[in-house]
Length: 176
Image (cartoon, rainbow, N blue to C red; front, side):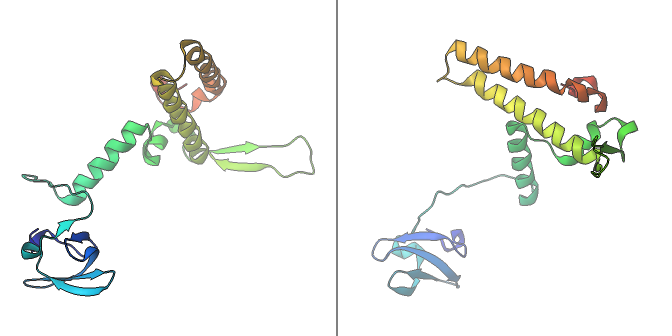
C-alpha cells in the first residue's frame, strides 16, 4: 500500500501486528495504533492493506462536494423523497403564506393554527411514502397476487381519502 493512499482514521491490517488505525502520516512512514500500542510503519515495505472496502475514482473532473451532492440527490430520488423547497414549490401560489385553522366546536378550547407550507410539506411526504409503499408492494416477491391486490386496494383508498387536499397543488399531475 502506498503512503499517499493512507488517511487519518483509516483502518488497516498489518501482517504481523493485525488491525490498526492510522493516527499520523509522515514523510516515509505512518504511525498506526495497534492493540499493543503505536508503531511507525512503512506502508509499502510492510505489506499494509486497507481493512475496509476502498473505492477509487479516476478521470473524475467534478469537485468532491458536487459528486457527493449528486449521489445524495440520486438516492433521494430513488427513495421517492423530495426536498422541502420543491414541495412548497408544488403549493399553489394562492395558498403560500396561508394558515390552516382548526377550530373546535367547544368554545372553551383554543383554535390551532398551522402554516400551510408546514401542512403541505407533511401532506406531500405522506404522498411520497404511499408511492414508496406502492412500489414495494408491487415489487415484492414474497406477497401473492391476491395479497398484492389487497394491499393495492388499501393504498388506493388512502389516495382517495387524500383527494380533499388536491386544491392545494399548483399542478394537477402532482395531486392525489
